[in-house]
Length: 515
Image (cartoon, rainbow, N blue to C red; front, top):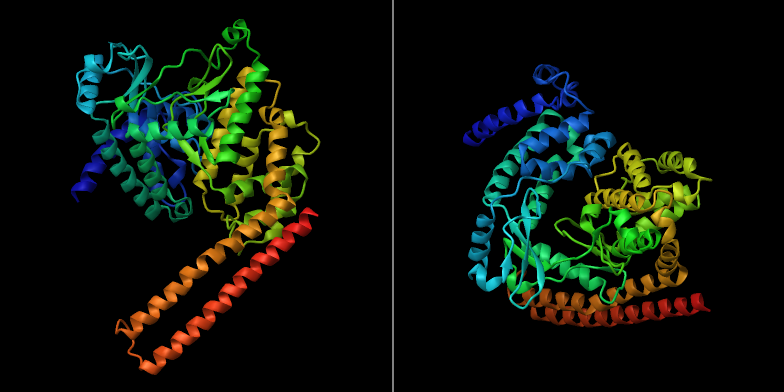
């Protein structure tokens, strides 16, 4: 009861701000709760400027850090808020006034348990960037290295926890009032948001993400990541190498430095493709403010609070889907959706193929430079919603990341498609991972995995038999135990023979495929 009263009071305050910006969700309850919809309409300011998404973005900016972050999460959930609102929320800028440098110094000293004078030879009290969760200061270490120091906002953890509790309560309540929202998993969305924010508020996790991404590009002369100073990094403080260069949207400055924007665009496309398909670990917020160009022409990413992961099976699904669209093979596109379990088996595959065709045919005959892969995915997710496809957060994050990357590419050259520049890389990856040899290798890998698990399965059988014989379960006559042991030995030999036979068969298939 206390929680409900507290959240209701907070809802009233939030409702006033939303209403002032004309952003109360009137249409959400128009069918299921018309009286509630009517009350919300009374609270909305009729003449608030802008589209619905722009009004919502303005309200979230006023509501503060938690809601700014929530807006960014919703910007990748077009299935929840619609494509237009999602696009408007994507413009929501995570910028807040800086907190005092004296507070930053106090947090750093408390976290690293050393005086600031020992940690840094110079520390600039004026923040160079300030967002909802943290802000950044420039500094110099005693050994002369230029660094950037990221510091969490004072009291930010408690503020987020309070708002997340409210959002969970609201999500649960919304599903009760509007059952059709259950498919979109609003509670799971908030829980994912809570986990994401919790990770962002532990700067050691961001440092680890930067380290992993940097490791994936070791030796790459075209793309890099700032090195982490682990001695000056803790839960609420992260120190990293300072990047000297141009923000990637400073096109005139880049050209004045003698750098070729088309070449940078090709490097950006390759870097993003390698992150997604080669590594399955990608920077999910690659807007121009998070990408710099060094005077030597190397791309360097910053801000690793939002990262995405996709497993190999999902990457193969994406490859098959793209191949299907490019070749107008809508049978393949439909099949991979059903095989991956993204669309329930109870749905009509032929009807789904027809829906997929409605997306792919308008692309036929158009030059690749006119095709947005991000928008293609967005259209596909919009169609699959009609076929009860469950939300795939990792794919939604990837789709929005692709749109962001494409937007960055258009800044460098609006007439060139970044995916077209990296087409040789795409084709090589598809051959290596979807060609006949790759499929045989996958088969061998699966069979090898089964063979490796056989000893464990046999040990489990032995353990179960021993438990039964020793009174852990059913009591067996000693002769029964001996008979079971004999059966166990025969079965073990048989499974081992089958395993090796399967390996031999797979190897023969590989030889035949290569020949």
